Length: 223
Image 1 (cartoon, one colour):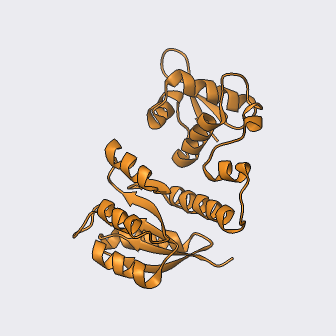
Image 2 (cartoon, rainbow, N blue to C red):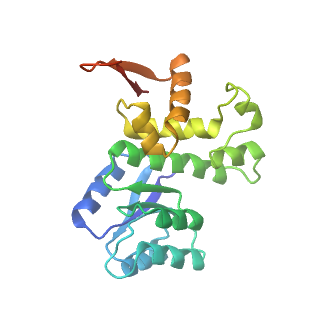
Image 3 (cartoon, helix red, strand yellow):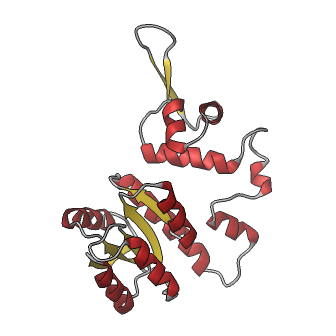
């Protein structure tokens, strides 16, 4: 397959170079262009028609959100992953409604960057290699699972929550406690511990015990 062509929209020259270097390290992607303002980005999109845009929220002329609206209003056939320091819930919700494929909060590691792009590549392939999709194809694209798959988990556990927890473990990429993971996912600590203990029982996660000066040891979980 041809490389997925990416336009990077970022007004900070140093961050732009970092994103470009990350892109170069990600197989199956190539740089279609770069822009440091909303207007420049719009012209680049019209001229080069990239497959994917890595879009910053804070630009010197218009916001990334305004540019997103413009792209969608004109029905330009490009996908968008947000790469921004904006993390307020209202902004995240709005961009999710508009169809942002993923949302990376600065600063982020190379592994999280590559995870976002690789997930996009897999999803794009599912939609471009078939003329007609089955329900299972659509479920896989949206990150959901079939009823049959969910039945394989023990009673009280579901695949969507399981995926959120395992994805966050991959993103953090270092041992964490159930409480730390709960804070990162926004879930209850008891819920997170239940899933982690199940994953440990099937050897999907490793448990390390760290002893303090008093009390019980603390459990740290990692993939």
